[in-house]
Amino acid sequence: MKNTQYAVIGLGRFGSSLAKELVALGHEVLGVDKNANVADEMSACLTHTLVADTTDEEALRAIGIRNMDCVVVAIGDDIQASILTSILLKDLGVNRVVVKALSALHGKVLQRIGVDRVIYPERDMGVRVANQLVSPNLLDFIELSDEYAIAEISATGKLARHSLKELDTRAKYGCTIVAINREKETIVAPSAEEVLHEGDVMVIIGTNEQIDRFERSANT
Ligand code: ATP
Image (tube, rainbow, N blue to C red; front, side):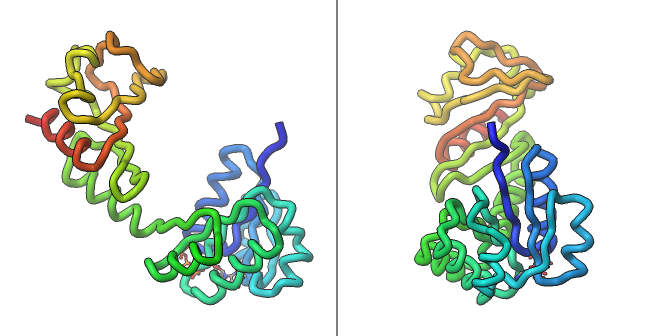
């Protein structure tokens, strides 16, 4: 299978971290930044790096950006550059354009342009960390929408040694245990007979409120 070809535009703190992780996950990553020093610094970590101002259509064409499977726009504070780059990428026919937004209004404009996904790293990380801080058993929390989330909850104390049937989370709380992480193993779509071990981590999907009620009940 062909590796996915990614380009990351803007190699600031977020863009460089994302680009390096994509390489670590085994993908080819082209890093683009208008600042030659920044591009230079990243050249050892990424498949290719280029210096270009991506608000320039000709520069984007010359890079061959159209051939990328997915382009992430991680330009920091320059909202105008972020929007112009995103318009050009969609005009040039890039299949999947993912853009970091700094504010709700920035995100709204990006949606109007027709980018494929808008991400809000600071906002989402704030939500995740706040949830982890208030709930000690909650190891991770990913918002799927305003209403739904996926959470990782540790099966300590009260929950351990019970089967999923006994916990009956779907009937009691409305949320579903979709996987269990047990040491190095992941049990996907566990059966009702599965018994939780001390130290297991449950991966749960549900509304924020359902997850919250389940998590609280586990603590009381
Ligand atoms: P982050 O916002 O990711 O936390 P940061 O604040 O360091 O990090 P910025 O420095 O504001 O982010 O921007 C990220 C990168 O985007 C910078 O290295 C900058 O040179 C690059 N960049 C800004 N405008 C353009 C552009 N038009 N074309 C290419 N790169 C650009």
